[in-house]
Image 1 (cartoon, rainbow, N blue to C red):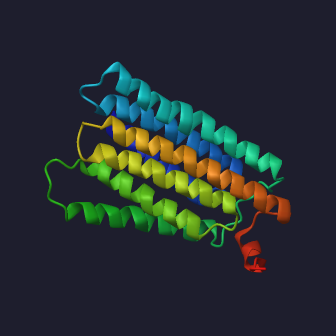
Image 2 (image 1 turned 45 degrees about the vertical axis):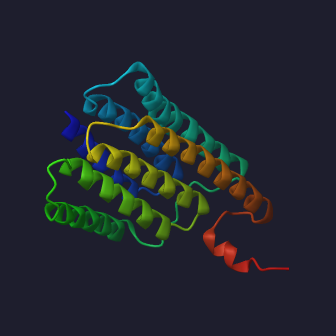
Amino acid sequence: MIDVLLITFLITLFYMAIANRLMTYIKVLAIQGILLFVVAFLQLEEINPLNLGLILLETIVVKAIVVPVFLVYILRKNNITREAEPFLSNFFSLIITTLIVVLTILLSNTIENTQLDKIFFIVAMSTLFFGLYLIATRRKIITHVMGYLVIENGIFVLSLAVGNEMPMLVNLGIMLDIFASVLILGIFLNKIGDVFKDVDVQQLNSLKDV
């Protein structure tokens, strides 16, 4: 069951690679949050109510509800067009995403550690690299925020890859990191939106010190 959920999570990366609309990205991030909760719930052998509540808060509440709603608010407030405007075509994005997954599979085969769950490691590293790829190949700054959130999801999966224990402080640190980064980047987007009509990374070339 867990393997099916992780494969489904991996499929969402391919879907993001060929998606052209920002709302699609936001919906996929929400779906990933739900998948992460189910995976974490099934993966943890011993789970106490406090840790369960923290995981629920981090995944369902924050990743699947709060962050997507906040991103939609940023889109509407800054009148950002709904197109993601990638630098590369969907075909090349799909090829590169496939190469990322293949390379992480080859990398996992070189690691001989009985405590490492390879399917978790493959999904985690694929998600991390895909998040970096998303940041590097999208024009709009808000897609960079979404790429960062994808990386955060990869870190969450990676924390599950090393074993069944998930330290509460690590979870809390990740959650606070999500809150701080999204809020700061949201404020940054709002300020940029006050200056430029469209929040495009190429517009930043015109910024200079005065």
